[in-house]
Length: 322
Ligand code: TXA
Ligand code: MG
Image 1 (cartoon, rainbow, N blue to C red):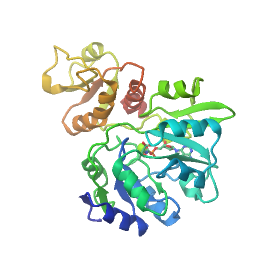
Image 2 (tube, rainbow, N blue to C red):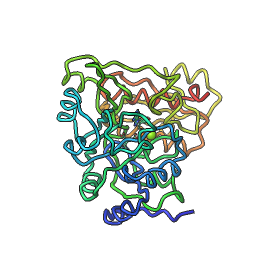
Image 3 (cartoon, helix red, strand yellow):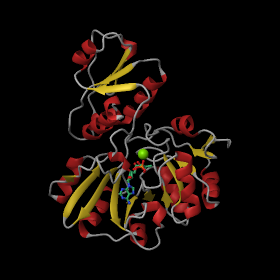
């Protein structure tokens, strides 16, 4: 077992990354488990620490849009999206250049790239001579971490260092987009709302339905899952169906009068989907640590970041675990 340290020393993170070690780093979406994207030796360690299957490719993080050109080919629409939304919670799937090792893309000719917005991630990338490959810093299949402590809870003993950058303020993973033959394909809903993307490109996104044969793990049926069973739907109906169980509720802004206060978690009293997204993974983790038999969650408004919230909750459901 390694001794896992949580601290705020960027220099220490840089030294470890330069030595081909993995380091958990903050980003504005979720914490990432980072390693030198150009070193196979380093990237293998990400898969090992996370227990992630090798067929599942990694996102490459760079410090600027200009740097993307070193590692991938950009079409016009992708370039437009990059100029509007990077740095930020957008990942572009682009034809990769030679420099990117096959292990990062799981053999695919396309590489997923993003420019993080978090000031610590930015500063780190600016001081490194290479891009960083980083999946979310959680054991494969579990809820993504949005604090250094969450990373520690999942990966203690598996990594040397967690760079603490506070709470991830987007709170859900990046939106993944691919442009192919003038069509714009949505691979994963996330922290950048669909409406914002469609406003910029002027055409509708195409949603890829590939659950049987997922090209991204965010499309695997059960993912982002709590250990405690979770069901999404109409709370009052679900309460009746499961009346014998010890139940916790996740709601958007509503307080349920027939439920004890300590058993219900309102994600945003003021009704902001952005704040609800920020709080989502925190609350899923808090409830998972308590002794509930079942977590019930509302279906959120299917707009803005509500789409990503619904997606993560849908996939966290126990019925999806088979
Ligand atoms: O917000 C985020 O995107 C966070 C932070 C750390 O950047 N990262 C993240 O990584 O969520 P991960 O590995 O947990 O999810 C990335 C998704 C996976 O579903 C992976 O299969 C997909 O992106 N992906 C990565 N490279 C790909 C590629 N070359 N082709 C298709 N899908 C790819
Ligand atoms: Mg992940």
